[in-house]
Image (cartoon, rainbow, N blue to C red; front, side, top):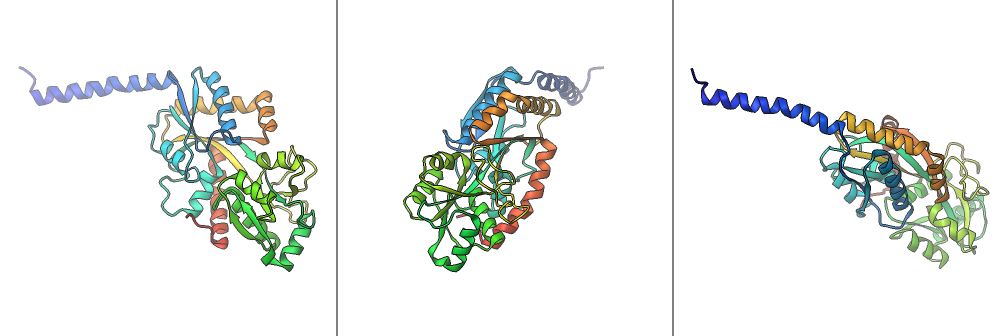
Length: 328
C-alpha cells in the first residue's frame, strides 16, 4: 500500500532534520573554517584599536584562521555593539567592547538597542586603561588636596574637560567630585585630542583623560599630572599618586575592555574562543605589548566579566542619577 503524500513529506522533513543535527555539530567542531570579524567600536589609531589588532593577530594564530578588525565607531560604542548583538551566533562576528558599552551606556541611555548582559556571550575581560586628573601648567597647586581646596574656595573659576558626555572620564570626574567635594564645571569635548588641547590652551584648568593620551604631554612638560584615578599607580607614570593614596581609600575609577560574541554562541565555539583568549592573555610577550601602550593586562573568564558588569552597572546608574548624566 503506497504511503500517503502528507506522511511521506513529514517523514522526509523529519529525516532532513535528523541529518542536519550532526551537520551543525560537525560545523561547530570544525570552527573556525573561515576568517573571523572582530568589531572594534572605536576609530582607528587609538589604544583600543591597537589592542584590537594585537588580540586579532594573537588569537587568529591560535585559532588557525585570520581575525580581521573592523572599526565601527559611533554613539559611544553603540553602533559597533549593536552590530554584534544582532549578528548570527556562529562565532564569526565578535566584539572588543568597553565599560562604556556594558555599564556606562546602560546607565545613561533609556533606549539602548542591546542589553549589556543578555545580548552577548561573555568571553573574558582583557585589560584596564588608567585615567588621570591633569592640570594646566599655570593652575596653582600640584596635589589633589590643592585642587579640592581651591575649587571649593572659588568654584566659579574652575572647570574640567573630558572626551565626551557619558564617557568613562566624565564618570571618573563626577565620582572624583562627589567623593572629595571638589567643585568644577564639566566641559565635554569630542575626543582626547581636543580635550587635552583645550587644557593646554587654558580653556579649562583641569581635565580627566586616559594615561595613553596624557603621558606624552606630561613627559613633554605641556601639562602636569595630579592623581591617578585607579586603585594602583600607573606603570607609565609611577611617581603619580592615586586618589586612594591621597586620602580617599577605596577610590577606583578606570576604563576596561572585554571580549564578547552574540548571545547564544554554541558551547564548542565559546570554549574555543575562551581558550584562545586565555592563552593569549597568559603570554608574557603579549602582556608586555599591552603595558608598552599604557594598558594593564587584566584577564578574567566569561563568568568573571559577567559578574563585573552586574556589579558595576547599579553603581554607574547611581553616579549618572546623582550627576544628572544623560545621553544627548
